[in-house]
Length: 329
Length: 257
Ligand SMILES: Cc1cc2nc3c(=O)[nH]c(=O)nc-3n(C[C@H](O)[C@H](O)[C@H](O)COP(=O)(O)OP(=O)(O)OC[C@H]3O[C@@H](n4cnc5c(N)ncnc54)[C@H](O)[C@@H]3O)c2cc1C
Image (cartoon, rainbow over all chains, first blue to last red; front, side, top):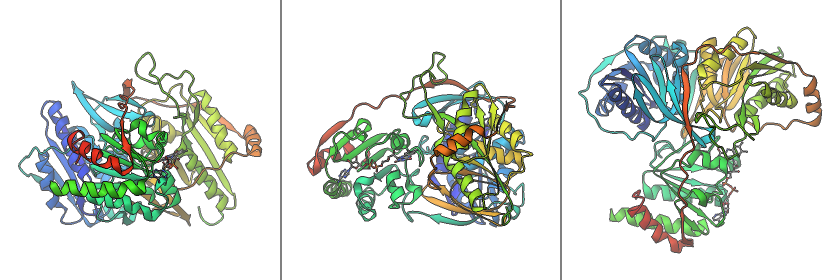
């Protein structure tokens, strides 16, 4: 039996969907290791405690609430100190983070403070006599390694969308905790959070991604992708590097080897050739649709469904058809 | 790094297989078969080298850019590439195989960096072979230095830095004092190609070789497989005529609509 500490990611005062995925993974890990309890760390500005209820709903036996103005923004130094202090108390066998920009910044710091092994970006795991083994893509997504972690506490991070949030309600139990280091004394300070695509879903949170490539020809034509995403209602818009290099979309929208890794339920590649570096970031999507005027484009090799043709003709028709399908419910 | 004071920058680089390769799994089932693989410097590390070179150039070329690699003997080739781009000297921390345990790597690098007096220690955001994305922040923690990861915009002035880092669909602007550790993301710059003159000069630049101090390993690769091939997809047709069939399949077969 091992207890699990899980870090619940917050951005701009809101719990991210990945936090519920991480709690789901932590619950699985605790159950697999013989029924330990799950404690979630929830840090933020005054008032963040109200978010604890969702964590309990997805399986946290207790929520450790760290409220302080110094956590209104991401505060890596004070958070690493606090999480490491909790984790090092002897109570926990495992720690779970989300393999997001924040989790992949914080988890190595915590592991290094404790001298713990870290298995990053897992898509699944199993437990055998206290040892956790997890699946991790490497070689730019071309191989899958099983990493096994020895020593306790062991630290792992889970890939966004690999664990779907599963309701598993516990009574809401919260405990106010304090920071192990003065949050205002951190050397690294976030001076600004720039939210891209305001109001739109994040690439890692969205079940559907509409991604556009150079085939769209100009920044303003991304409206075709935005419109299709709006028709789905649960979609985010991504881009290729060719597009971010042109400055048509912000760098943070880039999908691929040097951009984001995504695994949505549906990935629609619009005017994207399907270069190996792009495939590295999206080939784990459940269903892939490709729209390209070149029938030999490599994207068709990974696509479940393809349409050969001009995006400027196909996209408005597809958007209208998706709207109609949604309207029928 | 005040005014024209010399800047000392370490760039940690990794030798990785060229990814445009059809990988096969080695007989022991825990690693890729190395036969016939070609190697290069990890892309993100090239952008880190470029960042180091540009910072030194901005500073009137006073100071030093040092390329540090943990890897097998053959990784000297990747260090020479960094030297050909313009790095001043190289250090190879020799390890016959690079372990899966990021903390072991970070400890060996931190031991080398500790008394080096570096103003900045630069890494790539991720090594695309291990895809661990952990060495930089671990080194920062071991050396007790400020750290910003995923940096795609950077200004350094008067002993402080301002960096913008990529999040999912957003970004954060961070300020930090030097010395510091940064991990460099795509988008910060494009690496320069080594010139012929640079390649000739690189041959004469110092390259220290010493054993890596790896210590205890807590992470092991117990199995490696190739992901299942995606089944060949279906071209549904041409142009807008194929849209109704696509929507039908998204509803009935893929069940995503
Ligand atoms: C080190 C390195 C790292 C990289 N990292 C990434 C990464 O992370 N992500 C990434 O995406 N790329 C990455 N790349 C770049 C990658 O190699 C490709 O250049 C890029 O993915 C191509 O983008 P694209 O498909 O939008 O453009 P193109 O290759 O130009 O393809 C455009 C496609 O649109 C089609 N098209 C054109 N007009 C129309 C139309 N009217 N209707 C329908 N189809 C049309 C064309 O047939 C073509 O297939 C990287 C490259 C390198 C060297």
